[in-house]
Image (tube, rainbow, N blue to C red):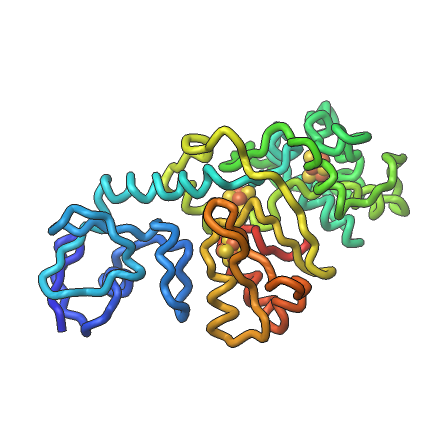
Length: 325
Ligand code: SF4
Ligand code: SF4
Ligand code: SF4
C-alpha cells in the first residue's frame, strides 16, 4: 500500500493503482484523450501528463503506477504548459474545420449547417436570419468554389415563423482548413447532392439542402480534442508543419464516415476491438509518420467494425470516426 502525494494531498493506495486513478479519487482533474476506462493504457497523447517532483520529469498519469514516496504536481502552470504543448502537437498534425466557413461568416452566429442538414434529412428547420442581412454566409460557402454557393439564406427562411429565438454571438473555431489542396474538393463533393443551385420551394428544399458539403465537423460539440484545446488555450497553428494533412472523407456504409486527417492515432478504436474480441477490428497500418488506422488488409471497413461499429465510433475522441449526419 504505497503512500504518495499529489498536489500536496497525501494518500495511501493499493499497489498498482495508476496516478490517474489516484488523482481522480482525490478530486484532482486530470484531462485524458487516448485513455478510455476499461482499456489498456496507451500513453500516446501525453495530455494527462503530471510532473514527478522527484525527477522533474513529466509522466503520463494513465500508465504510471503509484510507488512509495512519490510526489506529483498535477495542476501547476508548468503542468498546464506541458499539456497545452501536447495538445498543440496533436492539433499541428490535424486537418479539419471545427466550424463551417458559412457559420464563421454569419455576423449573427447562426448555425446554418445544422438547418441545412435537418432539411436534407427531410425535417422542417429554420433560423432567424434578419431580412436585411446581405448573406455573407453565401459568399463564404465552400460549394461556391466548385459551382454555386448553397442558397443558404432562402433555405434558412423556408419554414420560418415568428421566432423569439435570440441571435447568437459569433462563433470561433479551433481548427481551420483554409484554402483547399488540389483534389480535396472532390472529397467534399463525395457525399453531397450534385444538383445545380435552383429556386427554393418546399418541394426542392431537400435536394437543395443536400448540396451542402457538410464542411462543419460532425463532432464539433462532442470532440474531446476541441474541448481540451479550448480549456488549455492551445493554438492549432503554433506547431503546424509546412504541409498539412490532406482531407479524405471515406464513407463507411451508409451510416459512418472516416476522416483520417482528423485521427490523432490514439488507438482507442483498435484497443476497443481487441478488448471486446471483435472478429476483425481496426488496426494500425503503415509505420512512423505514415501510420494510419484502417481495417485489416482485404477486409471492408464496415465489416471490420462489425457489431461494435456504434461503440467504436462513439468512443473516438475526435471526428475521425463519426456518424455520417
Ligand atoms: S475533430 Fe475536433 S478539433 Fe478536429 S475539426 Fe472536428 S471538432 Fe475540430
Ligand atoms: S457547403 Fe454547406 S457547410 Fe460548407 S460553407 Fe456551404 S453551406 Fe456551409
Ligand atoms: S480513429 Fe479515432 S479512436 Fe481511432 S485512433 Fe483515430 S482518433 Fe483514435
